[in-house]
Image 1 (cartoon, one colour):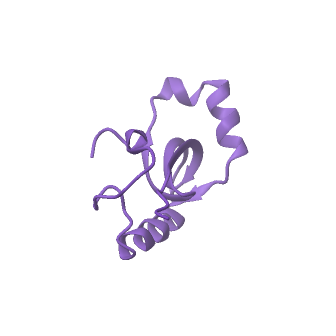
Image 2 (tube, rainbow, N blue to C red; image 1 turned 180 degrees about the horizontal axis):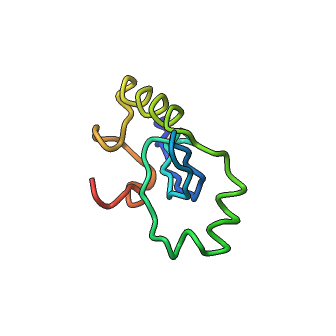
Image 3 (cartoon, one colour; image 1 turned 90 degrees about the vertical axis):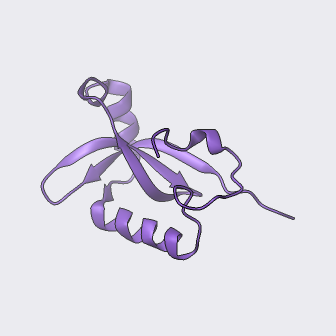
Length: 94
């Protein structure tokens, strides 16, 4: 049985050493691997803020470690061709 991996995306708080902001984070089977910055108007949207508040804060260190892990396992969908359940949910600009 060949199990396909699934891409998820959600709004989360992303914490850097100098700043914390809401981003659209991409996950592979719940492991974060990249994000898109969102426009300022979206950051002020109450629904976006509510979703981000429900999710775990992701730090630069966490994102680095999880993306490195996926790369080491040859499971980074931005680098390697993969059999994904929903490839249309990957970020547009690669």
